[in-house]
Image (cartoon, rainbow, N blue to C red; front, side):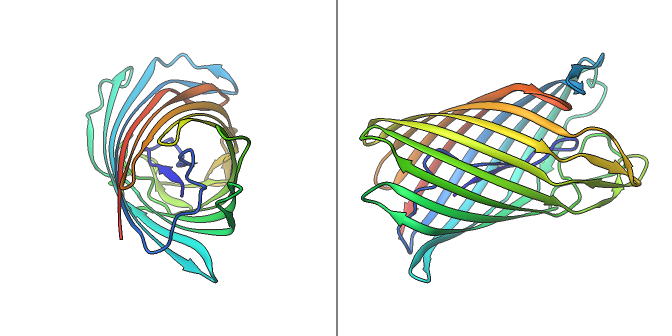
Length: 282
């Protein structure tokens, strides 16, 4: 159903749903998705103001996802696992740091559709995510590919048809984070409060096999503590995303682009691009 974007230190996993993936799948289907992502983070913000640091972090990632669909209590359901491989290139004021290559954290998910009506195009689903700390992590490094902690998220999503050509999808999720007891060079205990996110997506069906979508995302919460002391860095982030989806009976090609509209704390995302290819078989 959804996508988990995996980044490196000082970022938080974002639970994004690919447009149209709130539609219930048929049972007993296998799916393989290969994704390439390029993400650029720019200046760091504090309380809505750009800091004096002139920073840039460039991420390249390969995500591999296997999905299996089935029925549970006569309703559609699915599970997936998604490992990742990442490359991070620091530049500008961070150019003195080496590039990092290696494994990122691994996401797994279980999705269940409480309601699915293909005739009316209405779907209501929930998804549970577990993100395992499989990514490369060394507290003696400033930049890491993993976050060295478990996290869990719970999401609900609703999609309905507005007309023959228009669909809308909305979702909301909350994320919990385990402590990182070996944080950065100081080896301190790092904690993070709950992070709440919402997504609204409008989809235009250009033709039955071609869809254009626009999404708005909002994230709030996630304030951190070091050794119990608040860092006053709560997230308040607005984003947009665009997608073009080409479908066939056994595959799907998805092109996505997005960026931050504004952010309160942390690195601003200057752009995010995805190319995805997915294939299905029984």
